[in-house]
Length: 289
Length: 153
Image 1 (tube, chains in turn green, yellow):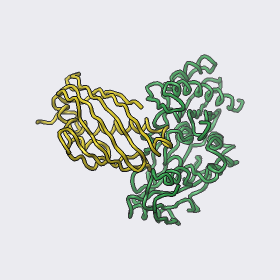
Image 2 (cartoon, chains in turn blue, purple; image 1 turned 90 degrees about the vertical axis):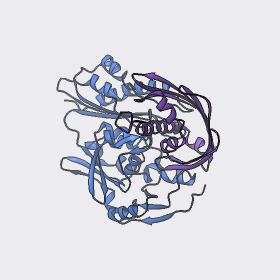
Image 3 (cartoon, each protein chain N blue to C red; image 1 turned 180 degrees about the horizontal axis):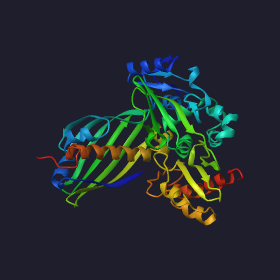
Image 4 (cartoon, each protein chain N blue to C red; image 1 turned 45 degrees about the horizontal axis):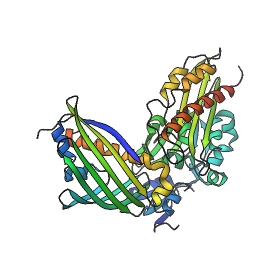
């Protein structure tokens, strides 16, 4: 279908994009366009102005900085999936990227766009929560940092306010005996997560769980942290029983969503099953002591 | 699609009932409601600019309040149409005195069709819940003045 009429401006810098946003409250930021453009073509979204930040050169990067990892908002899923640096120091990110959509989507879609869009079935939000990522949000008055736990507010709603742009994502470098995994049930048609679970575990020298950090997407209106699972794992010896009993808390106090494909109860059941699998896979990925 | 839930407001039942049947208060509390004009007794024509994230649509439709039994019960029927699709629904509100305040139990049956139902199916339930939550949060502020205390009448 054909979108409603709109203006298009290609911004060369973040400041230019921020100035354009300030001038027009009906403007939308365009990055990879893989969520926004389909909505526009169906006329579900009809912004009067698109501000394209997808070609700002210094907005697509992956590098180590101050002992952490920084990723520019306009970095594509494919750049993350294929990053040798990330495969070495933070394999959860390339693993998660590889689960997104298909090759075309991964080549064009960006991590910043996906995170800012906050689709309830998007893959990145789960990984952002599991990695305790920080979102750096730019505005005309400077920058602020928001933790992943506070960033995802509700269905397609984030902490980004009008006139602000997500500029960078920061993740601390996992150290010691840590393991990661992202497991997902793909929707057979759309490839979106019916359920997606990202797990980030660190183990003590005697093989107990030192700290577990988990994010679940696809189940509720927004990705969330299953606090009950984490507290059951922290300090526990890790075996099939402890993992299963911890995973049973995956959807505690969660109002799950139902649709034609999966009912709310089925999604809650899947959350438990996939949490169990994510934890087991994360433990397997821990390098030997 | 069904949505249901209970929301508690710290105000007497009569006050709450009056608020959720008052078109001016409803207009301020229904997310994105731009106008709610009376056409006949308990019947209104509404314009709503409703949306979630980048997805927004303007809906026009009729709202009718029926089966009114103050201060405990009424039914609201909505019949709206817009560029992204149509919405038809009935919501039943039951008010009960609880903990010195009022519990509003709501039960809605909604039909959504058109483009929004075709491509947004997986999100409609979450969107409806989110809008319901926004409605009750605004209603809370409207009645309690935002500090949880009933305002003087």
